[in-house]
Length: 82
Image 1 (cartoon, rainbow, N blue to C red):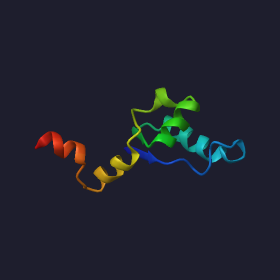
Image 2 (cartoon, one colour; image 1 turned 180 degrees about the vertical axis):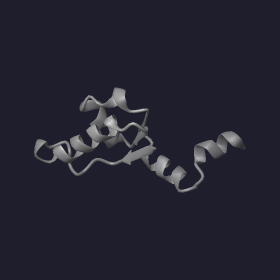
Image 3 (cartoon, rainbow, N blue to C red; image 1 turned 135 degrees about the vertical axis):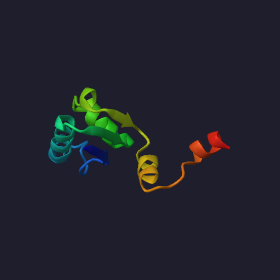
Image 4 (cartoon, one colour; image 1 turned 30 degrees about the horizontal axis):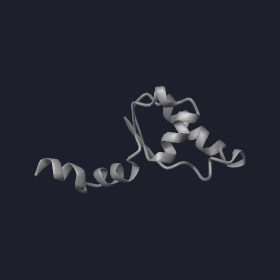
């Protein structure tokens, strides 16, 4: 019911290698569940591909997102809570 995506499929900046990333971005945009895209390159891919409006949450903090999902503590949140 939830899809998290962090990281494009290869060097999507070059047209010869962009198709994989475009297909994944399109599939996530069409997903009926909650969709989350994290990481600067992934954000660029969904924005440039015209999929951003179809994604439920977009964040440039891809590494932080993965750290949080694995149960790690986020320094910024910890600073606010202390």
